[in-house]
Image 1 (tube, rainbow, N blue to C red):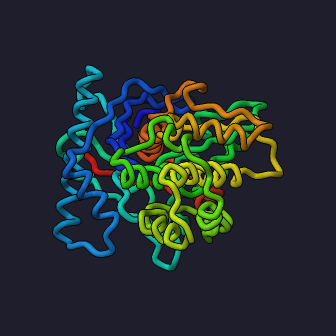
Image 2 (image 1 turned 45 degrees about the horizontal axis):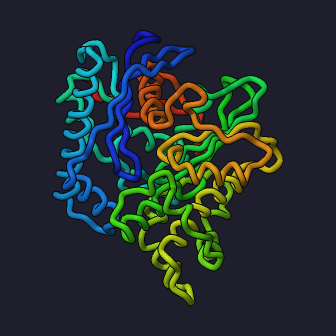
Length: 371
Protein backbone atom coordinates (compact mmCIF):
# COMPACT_ATOMS: atom_id res chain seq x y z
CA UNK A 1 0.00 0.00 0.00
CA UNK A 2 1.30 3.42 -0.99
CA UNK A 3 1.96 5.94 1.76
CA UNK A 4 0.18 8.62 -0.28
CA UNK A 5 -3.17 8.49 -2.03
CA UNK A 6 -6.79 9.57 -2.20
CA UNK A 7 -9.13 8.62 0.63
CA UNK A 8 -12.72 9.51 1.48
CA UNK A 9 -13.95 10.06 5.02
CA UNK A 10 -17.67 9.93 5.72
CA UNK A 11 -19.63 10.49 8.92
CA UNK A 12 -23.03 11.45 10.22
CA UNK A 13 -22.87 12.93 13.70
CA UNK A 14 -25.17 12.60 16.68
CA UNK A 15 -27.28 15.48 15.38
CA UNK A 16 -28.13 13.37 12.28
CA UNK A 17 -28.17 16.59 10.26
CA UNK A 18 -26.19 15.47 7.18
CA UNK A 19 -23.87 12.90 5.64
CA UNK A 20 -20.50 14.63 5.53
CA UNK A 21 -18.11 13.32 2.86
CA UNK A 22 -14.54 14.57 2.45
CA UNK A 23 -12.07 13.64 -0.29
CA UNK A 24 -8.50 13.96 0.95
CA UNK A 25 -5.01 13.32 -0.26
CA UNK A 26 -3.24 11.64 2.60
CA UNK A 27 0.48 11.15 3.05
CA UNK A 28 2.86 10.42 5.90
CA UNK A 29 3.35 14.09 6.77
CA UNK A 30 0.49 16.00 5.19
CA UNK A 31 -3.25 15.66 4.68
CA UNK A 32 -4.95 17.87 2.09
CA UNK A 33 -8.70 18.41 1.79
CA UNK A 34 -9.59 18.31 -1.91
CA UNK A 35 -13.39 18.21 -2.17
CA UNK A 36 -16.44 17.92 0.05
CA UNK A 37 -20.10 17.06 -0.14
CA UNK A 38 -22.87 17.32 2.44
CA UNK A 39 -25.50 14.71 1.60
CA UNK A 40 -29.03 14.99 2.91
CA UNK A 41 -30.82 12.17 4.66
CA UNK A 42 -34.29 11.50 3.29
CA UNK A 43 -36.71 12.85 5.90
CA UNK A 44 -38.16 9.44 6.69
CA UNK A 45 -34.68 7.94 7.13
CA UNK A 46 -33.59 10.71 9.51
CA UNK A 47 -36.79 10.32 11.52
CA UNK A 48 -36.23 6.56 11.76
CA UNK A 49 -32.62 7.04 12.95
CA UNK A 50 -33.65 9.50 15.65
CA UNK A 51 -36.51 7.23 16.70
CA UNK A 52 -34.09 4.32 17.01
CA UNK A 53 -31.75 6.42 19.18
CA UNK A 54 -34.63 7.26 21.53
CA UNK A 55 -35.95 3.71 21.84
CA UNK A 56 -34.74 1.29 24.51
CA UNK A 57 -35.72 -1.76 22.47
CA UNK A 58 -35.90 -2.37 18.74
CA UNK A 59 -36.74 -5.34 16.52
CA UNK A 60 -33.87 -7.09 14.75
CA UNK A 61 -35.72 -6.54 11.47
CA UNK A 62 -35.91 -2.79 12.01
CA UNK A 63 -32.25 -2.57 13.07
CA UNK A 64 -30.97 -4.64 10.16
CA UNK A 65 -33.09 -2.79 7.62
CA UNK A 66 -31.99 0.61 8.89
CA UNK A 67 -28.34 -0.50 8.81
CA UNK A 68 -28.61 -1.25 5.09
CA UNK A 69 -30.68 1.90 4.33
CA UNK A 70 -28.01 4.08 5.92
CA UNK A 71 -25.36 2.19 3.95
CA UNK A 72 -27.24 3.04 0.73
CA UNK A 73 -27.47 6.71 1.73
CA UNK A 74 -23.75 6.86 2.51
CA UNK A 75 -22.85 5.17 -0.77
CA UNK A 76 -25.04 7.57 -2.76
CA UNK A 77 -23.30 10.57 -1.19
CA UNK A 78 -19.84 9.08 -1.74
CA UNK A 79 -20.55 8.36 -5.41
CA UNK A 80 -21.84 11.90 -5.85
CA UNK A 81 -18.66 13.31 -4.30
CA UNK A 82 -16.44 11.22 -6.58
CA UNK A 83 -18.34 12.39 -9.65
CA UNK A 84 -18.22 16.00 -8.46
CA UNK A 85 -14.43 15.73 -8.03
CA UNK A 86 -14.00 14.31 -11.55
CA UNK A 87 -12.45 11.08 -10.29
CA UNK A 88 -13.28 7.40 -10.62
CA UNK A 89 -13.66 4.77 -7.92
CA UNK A 90 -10.40 3.12 -8.99
CA UNK A 91 -8.48 6.25 -7.97
CA UNK A 92 -9.69 6.08 -4.35
CA UNK A 93 -7.64 3.81 -2.09
CA UNK A 94 -10.26 3.47 0.62
CA UNK A 95 -13.31 4.91 2.32
CA UNK A 96 -13.19 5.51 6.05
CA UNK A 97 -16.82 5.30 7.17
CA UNK A 98 -17.60 6.19 10.75
CA UNK A 99 -21.27 5.36 10.27
CA UNK A 100 -24.17 6.65 12.32
CA UNK A 101 -23.89 6.08 16.07
CA UNK A 102 -27.07 4.71 17.60
CA UNK A 103 -25.72 3.53 20.96
CA UNK A 104 -22.49 3.99 22.89
CA UNK A 105 -21.75 2.03 26.07
CA UNK A 106 -18.19 2.97 27.10
CA UNK A 107 -17.98 1.42 30.57
CA UNK A 108 -18.55 -1.97 32.16
CA UNK A 109 -17.25 -5.47 31.49
CA UNK A 110 -18.82 -5.67 28.03
CA UNK A 111 -18.41 -2.20 26.60
CA UNK A 112 -19.48 -1.58 23.00
CA UNK A 113 -20.40 1.08 20.48
CA UNK A 114 -22.84 0.57 17.63
CA UNK A 115 -22.62 2.49 14.35
CA UNK A 116 -24.96 1.60 11.51
CA UNK A 117 -24.32 2.10 7.80
CA UNK A 118 -23.51 -1.35 6.45
CA UNK A 119 -19.93 -1.32 5.08
CA UNK A 120 -20.67 -4.30 2.83
CA UNK A 121 -23.32 -2.20 1.10
CA UNK A 122 -20.98 0.80 0.82
CA UNK A 123 -18.17 -1.32 -0.67
CA UNK A 124 -20.55 -2.98 -3.12
CA UNK A 125 -22.25 0.19 -4.33
CA UNK A 126 -19.06 2.27 -4.62
CA UNK A 127 -16.58 -0.40 -5.71
CA UNK A 128 -14.11 0.95 -3.13
CA UNK A 129 -12.48 -0.80 -0.17
CA UNK A 130 -14.34 0.38 2.91
CA UNK A 131 -13.06 0.61 6.48
CA UNK A 132 -15.67 0.73 9.23
CA UNK A 133 -16.18 0.05 12.94
CA UNK A 134 -13.25 2.10 14.19
CA UNK A 135 -14.27 2.24 17.83
CA UNK A 136 -14.72 -1.34 19.00
CA UNK A 137 -11.13 -2.56 18.66
CA UNK A 138 -10.14 0.23 21.03
CA UNK A 139 -12.91 -0.89 23.39
CA UNK A 140 -11.76 -4.51 23.20
CA UNK A 141 -8.35 -3.23 24.35
CA UNK A 142 -9.95 -1.62 27.40
CA UNK A 143 -10.63 1.82 25.94
CA UNK A 144 -13.86 3.77 25.73
CA UNK A 145 -13.80 3.96 21.92
CA UNK A 146 -14.00 7.75 22.02
CA UNK A 147 -12.95 10.36 21.39
CA UNK A 148 -10.88 9.50 18.31
CA UNK A 149 -10.81 12.92 16.61
CA UNK A 150 -7.98 14.17 18.89
CA UNK A 151 -5.61 11.83 17.05
CA UNK A 152 -6.16 13.86 13.88
CA UNK A 153 -6.24 17.15 15.78
CA UNK A 154 -2.65 16.50 16.89
CA UNK A 155 -1.66 15.69 13.30
CA UNK A 156 -3.36 18.74 11.82
CA UNK A 157 -3.33 21.57 14.39
CA UNK A 158 -0.04 21.21 16.24
CA UNK A 159 1.91 24.48 16.13
CA UNK A 160 5.34 24.75 17.71
CA UNK A 161 5.47 27.19 20.59
CA UNK A 162 1.69 27.74 20.75
CA UNK A 163 -0.27 26.03 23.53
CA UNK A 164 -3.46 24.90 21.87
CA UNK A 165 -6.63 23.07 22.73
CA UNK A 166 -9.07 21.92 20.08
CA UNK A 167 -12.76 21.50 20.83
CA UNK A 168 -15.10 19.78 18.44
CA UNK A 169 -18.70 20.85 19.03
CA UNK A 170 -21.08 18.47 17.32
CA UNK A 171 -24.04 16.87 19.02
CA UNK A 172 -21.59 16.16 21.83
CA UNK A 173 -18.41 18.13 22.48
CA UNK A 174 -14.90 16.79 22.90
CA UNK A 175 -11.69 18.54 23.79
CA UNK A 176 -8.10 17.85 22.74
CA UNK A 177 -5.04 19.06 24.63
CA UNK A 178 -2.37 19.08 21.92
CA UNK A 179 0.90 17.52 22.98
CA UNK A 180 3.99 19.81 22.92
CA UNK A 181 5.77 17.04 21.02
CA UNK A 182 4.40 17.04 17.43
CA UNK A 183 4.27 13.25 16.97
CA UNK A 184 3.14 12.35 20.50
CA UNK A 185 -0.37 11.34 21.53
CA UNK A 186 -2.58 14.18 22.75
CA UNK A 187 -4.92 14.00 25.71
CA UNK A 188 -8.64 14.53 25.36
CA UNK A 189 -12.14 13.46 26.29
CA UNK A 190 -15.81 14.23 25.73
CA UNK A 191 -16.83 17.27 27.76
CA UNK A 192 -20.58 16.62 27.54
CA UNK A 193 -23.35 18.07 25.38
CA UNK A 194 -22.41 20.24 22.44
CA UNK A 195 -25.37 21.16 20.25
CA UNK A 196 -27.63 18.24 21.12
CA UNK A 197 -29.70 19.78 23.92
CA UNK A 198 -30.00 23.16 22.17
CA UNK A 199 -31.18 21.37 19.02
CA UNK A 200 -33.69 19.29 20.98
CA UNK A 201 -35.13 22.34 22.73
CA UNK A 202 -35.49 24.58 19.68
CA UNK A 203 -37.07 21.70 17.77
CA UNK A 204 -39.63 21.27 20.56
CA UNK A 205 -40.29 24.97 21.25
CA UNK A 206 -40.02 26.49 17.75
CA UNK A 207 -40.02 23.56 15.33
CA UNK A 208 -36.56 24.54 14.05
CA UNK A 209 -33.68 22.13 13.64
CA UNK A 210 -31.03 24.43 15.13
CA UNK A 211 -30.49 27.89 16.61
CA UNK A 212 -28.98 29.91 13.75
CA UNK A 213 -25.81 31.63 15.05
CA UNK A 214 -27.23 31.22 18.58
CA UNK A 215 -29.58 34.16 18.04
CA UNK A 216 -32.42 32.70 20.08
CA UNK A 217 -30.11 31.80 22.97
CA UNK A 218 -28.71 35.34 22.90
CA UNK A 219 -32.23 36.73 23.36
CA UNK A 220 -32.70 34.96 26.70
CA UNK A 221 -31.02 35.02 30.08
CA UNK A 222 -29.47 32.28 32.17
CA UNK A 223 -31.88 30.56 34.52
CA UNK A 224 -29.55 29.94 37.44
CA UNK A 225 -31.74 27.30 39.09
CA UNK A 226 -31.95 25.30 35.87
CA UNK A 227 -28.23 25.69 35.20
CA UNK A 228 -27.42 24.26 38.63
CA UNK A 229 -29.66 21.26 37.97
CA UNK A 230 -27.98 20.69 34.60
CA UNK A 231 -24.48 20.95 36.06
CA UNK A 232 -25.39 18.58 38.88
CA UNK A 233 -24.73 15.62 36.59
CA UNK A 234 -22.24 12.96 37.62
CA UNK A 235 -20.67 12.88 34.16
CA UNK A 236 -19.16 16.34 34.61
CA UNK A 237 -17.35 15.17 37.76
CA UNK A 238 -15.89 12.02 36.22
CA UNK A 239 -12.16 11.97 35.64
CA UNK A 240 -10.94 11.21 32.10
CA UNK A 241 -10.91 9.02 30.14
CA UNK A 242 -14.62 9.50 29.55
CA UNK A 243 -17.04 9.62 26.65
CA UNK A 244 -20.77 10.13 26.30
CA UNK A 245 -23.66 10.43 23.85
CA UNK A 246 -27.41 10.60 23.40
CA UNK A 247 -27.75 7.67 25.78
CA UNK A 248 -27.28 10.22 28.59
CA UNK A 249 -27.84 13.72 27.22
CA UNK A 250 -31.22 13.50 25.53
CA UNK A 251 -34.79 14.81 25.62
CA UNK A 252 -35.70 12.79 28.72
CA UNK A 253 -32.63 14.01 30.61
CA UNK A 254 -33.59 17.62 29.91
CA UNK A 255 -37.27 17.13 30.72
CA UNK A 256 -36.42 15.48 34.05
CA UNK A 257 -34.51 18.58 35.11
CA UNK A 258 -37.13 21.01 33.87
CA UNK A 259 -39.69 19.09 35.90
CA UNK A 260 -37.67 19.68 39.08
CA UNK A 261 -38.00 23.47 38.81
CA UNK A 262 -40.50 25.28 41.02
CA UNK A 263 -41.26 27.67 38.15
CA UNK A 264 -41.87 27.48 34.42
CA UNK A 265 -38.94 29.15 32.66
CA UNK A 266 -39.28 31.22 29.53
CA UNK A 267 -38.43 29.14 26.45
CA UNK A 268 -35.67 31.52 25.34
CA UNK A 269 -34.16 31.40 28.83
CA UNK A 270 -33.97 27.60 28.59
CA UNK A 271 -32.08 27.92 25.29
CA UNK A 272 -29.73 30.49 26.80
CA UNK A 273 -29.10 28.21 29.77
CA UNK A 274 -28.36 25.22 27.53
CA UNK A 275 -25.82 27.32 25.62
CA UNK A 276 -24.25 28.27 28.95
CA UNK A 277 -24.06 24.59 29.94
CA UNK A 278 -22.14 23.77 26.76
CA UNK A 279 -19.77 26.71 27.17
CA UNK A 280 -19.10 26.13 30.88
CA UNK A 281 -18.56 22.37 30.53
CA UNK A 282 -16.00 23.01 27.78
CA UNK A 283 -14.08 25.72 29.62
CA UNK A 284 -14.14 23.90 32.95
CA UNK A 285 -12.61 20.87 31.20
CA UNK A 286 -9.51 22.86 30.27
CA UNK A 287 -6.63 21.99 32.57
CA UNK A 288 -6.27 25.03 34.84
CA UNK A 289 -2.63 24.16 35.46
CA UNK A 290 -1.78 24.82 31.81
CA UNK A 291 -1.99 28.14 29.97
CA UNK A 292 -4.08 27.87 26.81
CA UNK A 293 -2.96 30.34 24.17
CA UNK A 294 -5.54 29.30 21.60
CA UNK A 295 -8.80 27.36 21.72
CA UNK A 296 -9.63 26.11 18.22
CA UNK A 297 -13.30 25.29 17.63
CA UNK A 298 -14.53 22.94 14.91
CA UNK A 299 -17.79 21.16 14.16
CA UNK A 300 -21.24 22.66 13.75
CA UNK A 301 -20.85 24.67 16.95
CA UNK A 302 -18.25 26.83 15.19
CA UNK A 303 -21.19 28.53 13.43
CA UNK A 304 -22.85 29.45 16.73
CA UNK A 305 -21.58 33.02 17.06
CA UNK A 306 -23.10 33.50 20.49
CA UNK A 307 -21.49 30.31 21.81
CA UNK A 308 -18.09 31.42 20.51
CA UNK A 309 -18.53 34.75 22.25
CA UNK A 310 -19.29 33.01 25.54
CA UNK A 311 -16.24 30.75 25.17
CA UNK A 312 -14.07 33.83 24.63
CA UNK A 313 -15.58 35.60 27.65
CA UNK A 314 -14.93 32.53 29.80
CA UNK A 315 -11.35 32.20 28.53
CA UNK A 316 -10.04 35.78 28.72
CA UNK A 317 -6.38 34.78 28.77
CA UNK A 318 -6.61 32.80 25.53
CA UNK A 319 -7.83 33.38 21.99
CA UNK A 320 -10.85 31.54 20.60
CA UNK A 321 -10.51 30.65 16.92
CA UNK A 322 -12.22 28.31 14.52
CA UNK A 323 -10.34 25.67 12.56
CA UNK A 324 -11.01 27.80 9.45
CA UNK A 325 -8.46 30.22 10.89
CA UNK A 326 -5.97 27.35 10.89
CA UNK A 327 -6.58 26.25 7.30
CA UNK A 328 -9.26 23.56 7.64
CA UNK A 329 -12.99 24.25 7.49
CA UNK A 330 -14.77 23.59 10.76
CA UNK A 331 -17.47 21.68 8.90
CA UNK A 332 -15.12 18.99 7.61
CA UNK A 333 -12.69 18.16 10.40
CA UNK A 334 -14.54 15.02 11.51
CA UNK A 335 -15.04 13.64 8.00
CA UNK A 336 -11.36 14.27 7.23
CA UNK A 337 -10.48 12.49 10.48
CA UNK A 338 -12.01 9.23 9.32
CA UNK A 339 -10.41 9.45 5.89
CA UNK A 340 -7.09 9.92 7.71
CA UNK A 341 -7.82 6.98 10.03
CA UNK A 342 -8.58 4.84 6.97
CA UNK A 343 -5.12 5.71 5.67
CA UNK A 344 -3.62 4.62 9.00
CA UNK A 345 -5.55 1.34 8.97
CA UNK A 346 -4.76 0.43 5.38
CA UNK A 347 -1.07 1.04 6.08
CA UNK A 348 -1.33 -1.12 9.22
CA UNK A 349 -0.38 1.76 11.49
CA UNK A 350 -1.23 1.24 15.14
CA UNK A 351 -3.04 4.12 16.81
CA UNK A 352 -2.00 5.00 20.34
CA UNK A 353 -5.15 6.12 22.15
CA UNK A 354 -4.07 5.22 25.68
CA UNK A 355 -4.14 8.83 26.91
CA UNK A 356 -7.47 9.45 25.19
CA UNK A 357 -9.66 6.44 25.72
CA UNK A 358 -7.81 4.44 28.37
CA UNK A 359 -6.90 1.59 26.02
CA UNK A 360 -4.25 -0.76 27.39
CA UNK A 361 -2.06 -0.62 24.28
CA UNK A 362 -2.01 0.78 20.71
CA UNK A 363 -4.19 -1.00 18.14
CA UNK A 364 -4.97 -0.96 14.44
CA UNK A 365 -8.51 0.39 14.26
CA UNK A 366 -11.31 -0.59 11.92
CA UNK A 367 -12.49 -3.59 9.94
CA UNK A 368 -11.49 -3.67 6.25
CA UNK A 369 -14.06 -4.65 3.59
CA UNK A 370 -12.04 -5.20 0.43
CA UNK A 371 -13.39 -4.95 -3.10
